[in-house]
Image (cartoon, rainbow, N blue to C red; front, side, top):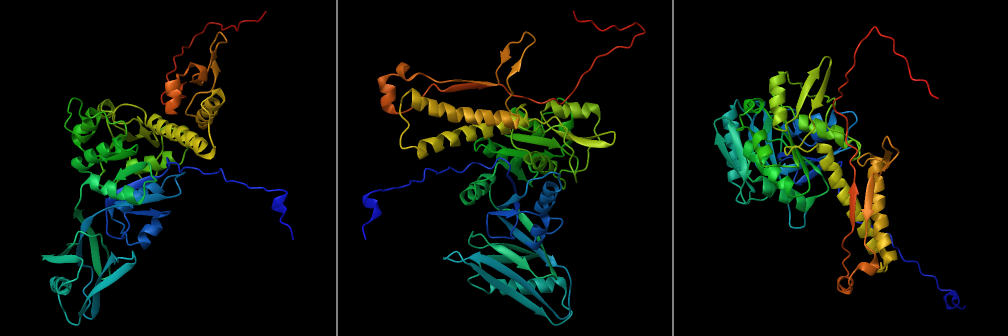
Length: 457
Protein backbone atom coordinates (compact mmCIF):
# COMPACT_ATOMS: atom_id res chain seq x y z
CA UNK A 1 0.00 0.00 0.00
CA UNK A 2 1.32 3.44 -0.93
CA UNK A 3 2.13 5.87 1.87
CA UNK A 4 -0.19 8.87 2.02
CA UNK A 5 2.78 11.05 3.01
CA UNK A 6 3.86 10.85 -0.66
CA UNK A 7 0.87 13.10 -1.45
CA UNK A 8 0.22 14.97 1.82
CA UNK A 9 2.88 15.37 4.48
CA UNK A 10 1.75 17.05 7.69
CA UNK A 11 4.11 17.76 10.57
CA UNK A 12 3.05 19.61 13.70
CA UNK A 13 5.64 21.19 15.96
CA UNK A 14 4.91 22.09 19.59
CA UNK A 15 5.59 25.79 20.15
CA UNK A 16 4.22 25.58 23.66
CA UNK A 17 7.33 25.75 25.79
CA UNK A 18 6.78 27.91 28.87
CA UNK A 19 9.36 29.03 31.39
CA UNK A 20 8.41 28.48 35.03
CA UNK A 21 7.24 31.55 36.90
CA UNK A 22 8.17 32.51 40.44
CA UNK A 23 5.50 31.75 43.05
CA UNK A 24 4.66 35.20 44.38
CA UNK A 25 2.09 33.71 46.74
CA UNK A 26 4.35 31.01 48.18
CA UNK A 27 5.76 31.41 51.68
CA UNK A 28 8.78 29.71 53.26
CA UNK A 29 9.23 29.52 57.05
CA UNK A 30 12.86 28.88 58.02
CA UNK A 31 13.93 27.37 61.31
CA UNK A 32 15.85 24.62 63.06
CA UNK A 33 14.47 21.09 62.94
CA UNK A 34 15.48 17.48 62.35
CA UNK A 35 12.10 15.96 61.50
CA UNK A 36 12.86 15.44 57.80
CA UNK A 37 15.96 14.94 55.70
CA UNK A 38 14.80 17.40 53.03
CA UNK A 39 15.82 21.03 53.22
CA UNK A 40 12.35 22.08 52.05
CA UNK A 41 9.08 20.33 52.90
CA UNK A 42 5.63 21.45 51.76
CA UNK A 43 2.65 21.23 54.11
CA UNK A 44 -1.01 21.94 53.39
CA UNK A 45 -2.23 21.83 56.98
CA UNK A 46 -0.91 22.13 60.49
CA UNK A 47 -1.97 18.51 61.10
CA UNK A 48 0.53 17.35 58.48
CA UNK A 49 3.27 18.97 60.54
CA UNK A 50 2.09 17.14 63.65
CA UNK A 51 2.23 13.86 61.74
CA UNK A 52 5.80 14.72 60.70
CA UNK A 53 6.86 14.98 64.34
CA UNK A 54 6.59 18.71 65.08
CA UNK A 55 5.40 19.41 68.62
CA UNK A 56 2.90 22.07 69.66
CA UNK A 57 5.62 24.27 71.21
CA UNK A 58 8.05 24.01 68.29
CA UNK A 59 8.72 27.52 66.87
CA UNK A 60 8.19 26.25 63.32
CA UNK A 61 4.85 24.76 64.34
CA UNK A 62 3.74 28.00 66.04
CA UNK A 63 4.78 30.08 63.02
CA UNK A 64 2.95 27.76 60.61
CA UNK A 65 -0.08 27.77 62.90
CA UNK A 66 -0.32 31.56 62.59
CA UNK A 67 0.15 31.18 58.82
CA UNK A 68 -2.64 28.61 58.43
CA UNK A 69 -5.04 30.43 60.80
CA UNK A 70 -5.91 33.21 58.34
CA UNK A 71 -9.05 33.50 56.24
CA UNK A 72 -8.47 33.47 53.35
CA UNK A 73 -5.02 31.87 53.29
CA UNK A 74 -2.66 30.25 50.79
CA UNK A 75 -3.19 26.55 50.19
CA UNK A 76 0.27 25.56 51.44
CA UNK A 77 3.43 26.67 53.19
CA UNK A 78 7.00 25.48 52.79
CA UNK A 79 9.22 24.73 55.77
CA UNK A 80 12.93 25.40 55.26
CA UNK A 81 15.31 23.43 57.43
CA UNK A 82 18.25 25.05 59.19
CA UNK A 83 20.74 22.47 60.46
CA UNK A 84 20.90 22.01 64.21
CA UNK A 85 21.48 19.48 66.94
CA UNK A 86 18.94 17.94 69.30
CA UNK A 87 18.23 17.79 73.00
CA UNK A 88 16.46 14.69 74.31
CA UNK A 89 15.12 14.00 77.77
CA UNK A 90 12.97 11.30 79.33
CA UNK A 91 9.23 11.94 79.19
CA UNK A 92 8.25 8.85 81.17
CA UNK A 93 10.21 6.32 83.18
CA UNK A 94 8.81 2.87 82.51
CA UNK A 95 10.11 0.02 84.72
CA UNK A 96 9.77 -2.26 81.72
CA UNK A 97 10.03 0.01 78.71
CA UNK A 98 11.96 0.35 75.48
CA UNK A 99 13.57 3.70 74.65
CA UNK A 100 14.58 4.17 71.01
CA UNK A 101 16.27 6.92 69.05
CA UNK A 102 16.12 6.35 65.28
CA UNK A 103 18.53 8.19 63.01
CA UNK A 104 17.53 8.72 59.37
CA UNK A 105 20.23 9.39 56.75
CA UNK A 106 20.61 9.25 52.98
CA UNK A 107 22.36 6.36 51.27
CA UNK A 108 24.50 6.81 48.15
CA UNK A 109 21.48 5.91 45.98
CA UNK A 110 19.38 8.59 47.78
CA UNK A 111 17.30 6.02 49.64
CA UNK A 112 16.56 6.57 53.34
CA UNK A 113 18.50 4.53 55.88
CA UNK A 114 16.98 4.14 59.37
CA UNK A 115 19.35 3.22 62.23
CA UNK A 116 17.71 2.58 65.63
CA UNK A 117 19.54 2.90 68.97
CA UNK A 118 17.64 1.18 71.76
CA UNK A 119 17.80 0.74 75.53
CA UNK A 120 15.43 -1.61 77.34
CA UNK A 121 14.75 -0.63 80.93
CA UNK A 122 13.97 -3.64 83.10
CA UNK A 123 14.31 -1.97 86.45
CA UNK A 124 13.78 1.30 88.34
CA UNK A 125 16.46 3.15 86.38
CA UNK A 126 16.35 6.95 86.66
CA UNK A 127 16.29 9.40 83.70
CA UNK A 128 20.03 10.06 83.69
CA UNK A 129 20.81 6.35 83.60
CA UNK A 130 18.42 5.79 80.68
CA UNK A 131 19.99 8.60 78.65
CA UNK A 132 23.49 7.42 79.56
CA UNK A 133 22.72 3.95 78.25
CA UNK A 134 21.41 5.43 75.00
CA UNK A 135 24.53 7.58 74.68
CA UNK A 136 26.76 4.55 75.25
CA UNK A 137 24.87 2.60 72.57
CA UNK A 138 25.36 5.38 70.05
CA UNK A 139 29.03 5.85 70.95
CA UNK A 140 29.66 2.13 70.57
CA UNK A 141 28.64 2.31 66.91
CA UNK A 142 31.76 3.29 64.96
CA UNK A 143 29.62 4.03 61.90
CA UNK A 144 27.13 6.26 63.69
CA UNK A 145 26.29 9.53 61.89
CA UNK A 146 25.67 11.31 65.22
CA UNK A 147 27.46 11.89 68.50
CA UNK A 148 25.72 11.82 71.88
CA UNK A 149 26.78 13.47 75.13
CA UNK A 150 25.07 13.73 78.52
CA UNK A 151 24.44 17.11 80.17
CA UNK A 152 22.75 16.32 83.50
CA UNK A 153 19.28 15.06 82.45
CA UNK A 154 19.62 15.97 78.77
CA UNK A 155 21.07 13.91 75.93
CA UNK A 156 22.63 16.22 73.34
CA UNK A 157 22.80 14.99 69.76
CA UNK A 158 24.87 16.46 66.94
CA UNK A 159 26.07 15.35 63.52
CA UNK A 160 29.37 13.50 63.53
CA UNK A 161 30.27 13.96 59.86
CA UNK A 162 28.47 17.18 59.05
CA UNK A 163 25.91 15.20 57.09
CA UNK A 164 22.21 15.98 57.33
CA UNK A 165 20.23 13.62 59.52
CA UNK A 166 16.67 13.32 60.76
CA UNK A 167 15.70 12.01 64.17
CA UNK A 168 12.72 10.12 65.57
CA UNK A 169 12.13 9.11 69.19
CA UNK A 170 9.63 6.89 70.98
CA UNK A 171 6.79 8.48 72.96
CA UNK A 172 8.59 7.98 76.28
CA UNK A 173 11.26 10.47 75.13
CA UNK A 174 10.94 14.19 74.47
CA UNK A 175 12.96 15.79 71.67
CA UNK A 176 13.70 19.49 71.26
CA UNK A 177 15.70 21.26 68.58
CA UNK A 178 19.12 22.53 69.60
CA UNK A 179 20.91 25.66 68.45
CA UNK A 180 21.73 26.17 64.79
CA UNK A 181 25.02 24.94 63.39
CA UNK A 182 25.14 27.06 60.20
CA UNK A 183 24.87 30.62 58.97
CA UNK A 184 21.75 32.09 57.43
CA UNK A 185 23.49 32.37 54.05
CA UNK A 186 24.50 28.70 54.16
CA UNK A 187 20.96 27.68 55.08
CA UNK A 188 19.36 29.71 52.31
CA UNK A 189 21.83 28.63 49.64
CA UNK A 190 21.20 24.99 50.53
CA UNK A 191 17.43 25.62 50.41
CA UNK A 192 17.72 27.26 46.97
CA UNK A 193 19.59 24.26 45.60
CA UNK A 194 16.67 22.04 46.55
CA UNK A 195 13.70 24.34 45.89
CA UNK A 196 13.73 27.97 44.75
CA UNK A 197 9.99 28.29 44.10
CA UNK A 198 9.04 30.66 46.92
CA UNK A 199 8.84 34.41 47.40
CA UNK A 200 8.03 35.18 51.03
CA UNK A 201 10.50 34.30 53.78
CA UNK A 202 9.74 34.06 57.49
CA UNK A 203 12.32 33.20 60.15
CA UNK A 204 11.66 31.68 63.58
CA UNK A 205 14.87 33.13 65.03
CA UNK A 206 14.53 36.53 66.71
CA UNK A 207 18.28 37.03 67.11
CA UNK A 208 19.45 40.35 65.72
CA UNK A 209 22.35 38.85 63.80
CA UNK A 210 20.06 36.28 62.16
CA UNK A 211 17.45 38.89 61.19
CA UNK A 212 20.05 41.23 59.69
CA UNK A 213 21.69 38.34 57.81
CA UNK A 214 18.36 37.21 56.36
CA UNK A 215 17.47 40.78 55.36
CA UNK A 216 20.77 41.10 53.52
CA UNK A 217 20.21 37.76 51.78
CA UNK A 218 16.65 38.60 50.74
CA UNK A 219 17.74 41.96 49.33
CA UNK A 220 20.09 40.19 46.93
CA UNK A 221 17.69 37.44 45.87
CA UNK A 222 14.38 39.08 44.86
CA UNK A 223 12.53 37.73 47.90
CA UNK A 224 10.35 39.36 50.58
CA UNK A 225 11.32 38.81 54.22
CA UNK A 226 9.10 39.43 57.23
CA UNK A 227 10.11 39.40 60.90
CA UNK A 228 9.09 40.65 64.34
CA UNK A 229 10.95 41.96 67.38
CA UNK A 230 10.05 42.62 71.02
CA UNK A 231 12.82 45.12 71.76
CA UNK A 232 11.65 48.02 73.93
CA UNK A 233 14.00 50.39 72.10
CA UNK A 234 11.83 50.00 68.99
CA UNK A 235 9.10 51.98 70.79
CA UNK A 236 11.35 54.89 71.72
CA UNK A 237 11.78 57.78 69.33
CA UNK A 238 15.44 58.71 68.90
CA UNK A 239 16.74 55.33 70.10
CA UNK A 240 18.18 53.55 67.07
CA UNK A 241 19.78 50.57 68.79
CA UNK A 242 16.92 48.18 68.03
CA UNK A 243 16.87 45.73 65.13
CA UNK A 244 14.08 47.60 63.34
CA UNK A 245 16.14 50.79 63.29
CA UNK A 246 19.12 48.90 61.88
CA UNK A 247 16.92 47.49 59.13
CA UNK A 248 15.73 51.00 58.32
CA UNK A 249 19.25 52.42 58.33
CA UNK A 250 20.33 49.66 55.94
CA UNK A 251 17.56 50.84 53.61
CA UNK A 252 16.20 47.33 53.04
CA UNK A 253 13.39 47.32 50.48
CA UNK A 254 12.69 43.59 50.83
CA UNK A 255 12.23 43.34 54.59
CA UNK A 256 9.27 44.37 56.72
CA UNK A 257 9.22 44.16 60.51
CA UNK A 258 6.69 44.24 63.34
CA UNK A 259 7.07 45.41 66.87
CA UNK A 260 5.32 42.66 68.84
CA UNK A 261 5.61 42.21 72.60
CA UNK A 262 5.20 38.40 72.34
CA UNK A 263 7.41 37.96 69.28
CA UNK A 264 9.25 35.05 70.92
CA UNK A 265 6.18 32.81 70.57
CA UNK A 266 3.84 34.71 68.24
CA UNK A 267 4.41 35.37 64.54
CA UNK A 268 2.39 38.33 63.18
CA UNK A 269 4.56 38.47 60.06
CA UNK A 270 3.51 34.91 59.18
CA UNK A 271 -0.15 35.77 59.67
CA UNK A 272 0.08 38.95 57.58
CA UNK A 273 2.05 37.26 54.80
CA UNK A 274 -0.49 34.44 54.61
CA UNK A 275 -3.40 36.88 54.58
CA UNK A 276 -1.90 38.99 51.79
CA UNK A 277 -0.49 36.08 49.78
CA UNK A 278 -4.07 34.82 49.41
CA UNK A 279 -4.56 37.83 47.10
CA UNK A 280 -2.83 38.10 43.72
CA UNK A 281 -0.07 40.75 43.50
CA UNK A 282 -1.52 44.19 42.86
CA UNK A 283 -4.84 43.52 44.56
CA UNK A 284 -3.81 43.93 48.18
CA UNK A 285 -2.54 46.33 50.76
CA UNK A 286 -0.75 45.12 53.87
CA UNK A 287 -2.29 47.68 56.24
CA UNK A 288 -5.67 47.37 57.98
CA UNK A 289 -5.70 43.57 57.87
CA UNK A 290 -7.44 41.48 60.53
CA UNK A 291 -5.22 38.60 61.64
CA UNK A 292 -6.43 35.44 63.37
CA UNK A 293 -4.47 33.82 66.18
CA UNK A 294 -2.23 36.83 66.84
CA UNK A 295 -2.25 38.77 70.11
CA UNK A 296 -2.82 42.50 69.71
CA UNK A 297 -0.31 44.95 71.21
CA UNK A 298 -1.56 47.64 73.59
CA UNK A 299 0.55 50.59 72.45
CA UNK A 300 0.34 54.25 73.34
CA UNK A 301 0.08 56.65 70.43
CA UNK A 302 3.60 57.84 71.24
CA UNK A 303 5.00 54.31 71.02
CA UNK A 304 3.10 53.52 67.83
CA UNK A 305 4.34 56.68 66.12
CA UNK A 306 7.91 55.87 67.18
CA UNK A 307 7.58 52.46 65.51
CA UNK A 308 6.08 53.99 62.37
CA UNK A 309 8.90 56.54 62.32
CA UNK A 310 11.28 53.59 61.96
CA UNK A 311 9.13 52.12 59.16
CA UNK A 312 7.91 49.36 61.43
CA UNK A 313 4.47 47.75 61.58
CA UNK A 314 2.08 46.99 64.41
CA UNK A 315 -0.99 44.92 65.21
CA UNK A 316 -3.33 46.99 67.36
CA UNK A 317 -6.88 47.05 68.65
CA UNK A 318 -9.31 49.73 67.46
CA UNK A 319 -12.42 49.39 69.61
CA UNK A 320 -13.50 45.79 68.97
CA UNK A 321 -11.35 45.19 65.86
CA UNK A 322 -7.62 44.37 65.71
CA UNK A 323 -5.77 45.23 62.50
CA UNK A 324 -2.28 45.62 61.08
CA UNK A 325 -0.93 49.13 60.76
CA UNK A 326 1.49 50.90 58.39
CA UNK A 327 2.17 48.21 55.74
CA UNK A 328 5.71 49.34 54.91
CA UNK A 329 9.11 47.76 54.34
CA UNK A 330 12.12 48.95 56.33
CA UNK A 331 13.18 51.38 53.59
CA UNK A 332 9.81 53.14 53.76
CA UNK A 333 8.12 51.86 50.58
CA UNK A 334 4.76 50.09 50.72
CA UNK A 335 5.04 46.30 50.95
CA UNK A 336 2.42 45.80 48.23
CA UNK A 337 4.38 48.00 45.81
CA UNK A 338 7.51 45.86 46.26
CA UNK A 339 5.58 42.63 45.69
CA UNK A 340 3.74 44.02 42.65
CA UNK A 341 6.96 45.35 41.13
CA UNK A 342 8.63 41.96 41.48
CA UNK A 343 5.60 40.21 39.99
CA UNK A 344 5.40 42.63 37.03
CA UNK A 345 9.09 42.19 36.27
CA UNK A 346 8.71 38.42 36.30
CA UNK A 347 5.51 38.54 34.21
CA UNK A 348 7.07 40.73 31.51
CA UNK A 349 10.30 38.73 31.42
CA UNK A 350 8.63 35.34 31.12
CA UNK A 351 6.09 36.48 28.51
CA UNK A 352 8.84 37.87 26.27
CA UNK A 353 11.05 34.82 26.91
CA UNK A 354 8.17 32.58 25.80
CA UNK A 355 7.83 34.62 22.60
CA UNK A 356 11.54 34.31 21.82
CA UNK A 357 11.56 30.56 22.45
CA UNK A 358 8.33 29.61 20.70
CA UNK A 359 8.91 31.50 17.44
CA UNK A 360 11.36 30.33 14.80
CA UNK A 361 12.54 33.92 14.56
CA UNK A 362 11.40 37.33 15.64
CA UNK A 363 12.77 39.62 12.92
CA UNK A 364 14.56 42.86 13.71
CA UNK A 365 11.85 44.84 11.93
CA UNK A 366 8.90 46.96 12.97
CA UNK A 367 6.76 43.82 12.92
CA UNK A 368 9.21 41.95 15.17
CA UNK A 369 9.48 44.87 17.59
CA UNK A 370 5.68 44.98 17.67
CA UNK A 371 5.65 41.35 18.89
CA UNK A 372 7.84 42.31 21.84
CA UNK A 373 5.68 45.36 22.51
CA UNK A 374 2.52 43.23 22.45
CA UNK A 375 3.85 40.85 25.11
CA UNK A 376 4.96 43.74 27.32
CA UNK A 377 1.55 45.35 26.86
CA UNK A 378 -0.15 42.09 27.86
CA UNK A 379 1.82 42.04 31.12
CA UNK A 380 0.91 45.66 31.87
CA UNK A 381 -2.76 45.08 31.04
CA UNK A 382 -2.80 42.10 33.41
CA UNK A 383 -1.22 44.39 36.03
CA UNK A 384 -4.15 46.76 35.51
CA UNK A 385 -6.64 43.91 35.84
CA UNK A 386 -5.00 42.77 39.07
CA UNK A 387 -5.27 46.29 40.51
CA UNK A 388 -1.60 47.27 40.71
CA UNK A 389 -1.61 49.67 37.75
CA UNK A 390 -4.23 52.41 37.57
CA UNK A 391 -6.81 52.31 34.77
CA UNK A 392 -7.16 55.08 32.22
CA UNK A 393 -8.88 57.99 33.99
CA UNK A 394 -9.91 61.56 33.17
CA UNK A 395 -9.30 64.86 34.92
CA UNK A 396 -11.93 67.53 35.53
CA UNK A 397 -11.25 68.99 32.07
CA UNK A 398 -11.80 65.68 30.32
CA UNK A 399 -8.11 65.04 29.62
CA UNK A 400 -7.19 61.37 29.40
CA UNK A 401 -4.79 60.10 32.10
CA UNK A 402 -3.39 56.81 30.83
CA UNK A 403 -2.61 53.90 33.11
CA UNK A 404 0.60 53.15 31.25
CA UNK A 405 2.58 54.25 28.21
CA UNK A 406 4.98 52.09 26.15
CA UNK A 407 7.70 53.49 23.91
CA UNK A 408 9.51 51.33 21.36
CA UNK A 409 11.96 52.38 18.64
CA UNK A 410 11.32 52.21 14.90
CA UNK A 411 13.49 49.69 13.09
CA UNK A 412 14.65 52.41 10.69
CA UNK A 413 16.04 54.44 13.61
CA UNK A 414 18.23 51.60 14.90
CA UNK A 415 21.83 51.46 13.71
CA UNK A 416 23.16 48.58 11.62
CA UNK A 417 25.66 47.78 14.37
CA UNK A 418 22.89 47.49 16.97
CA UNK A 419 20.88 45.23 14.69
CA UNK A 420 23.96 43.09 14.12
CA UNK A 421 24.22 42.55 17.89
CA UNK A 422 20.63 41.16 17.84
CA UNK A 423 19.87 43.02 21.07
CA UNK A 424 16.76 45.21 21.13
CA UNK A 425 17.21 48.27 23.34
CA UNK A 426 15.22 51.44 24.11
CA UNK A 427 12.00 49.61 24.95
CA UNK A 428 10.55 51.62 27.82
CA UNK A 429 7.31 51.96 29.71
CA UNK A 430 5.86 54.16 32.41
CA UNK A 431 2.98 52.86 34.52
CA UNK A 432 0.90 54.70 37.08
CA UNK A 433 0.46 52.82 40.36
CA UNK A 434 -3.13 52.45 41.56
CA UNK A 435 -2.03 52.79 45.19
CA UNK A 436 -4.41 52.23 48.10
CA UNK A 437 -6.38 54.26 50.63
CA UNK A 438 -5.27 53.57 54.19
CA UNK A 439 -6.54 56.69 55.96
CA UNK A 440 -9.50 58.96 55.25
CA UNK A 441 -9.67 62.58 56.36
CA UNK A 442 -13.02 64.40 56.03
CA UNK A 443 -13.75 67.99 56.93
CA UNK A 444 -17.33 69.13 57.38
CA UNK A 445 -19.39 71.76 59.12
CA UNK A 446 -22.85 72.07 60.64
CA UNK A 447 -25.04 75.11 60.00
CA UNK A 448 -28.55 76.53 60.44
CA UNK A 449 -28.40 78.22 57.05
CA UNK A 450 -30.38 76.99 54.05
CA UNK A 451 -28.40 74.86 51.60
CA UNK A 452 -29.74 75.25 48.06
CA UNK A 453 -28.54 72.99 45.26
CA UNK A 454 -27.59 74.68 42.02
CA UNK A 455 -30.20 74.44 39.28
CA UNK A 456 -29.02 73.41 35.84
CA UNK A 457 -29.82 75.56 32.81
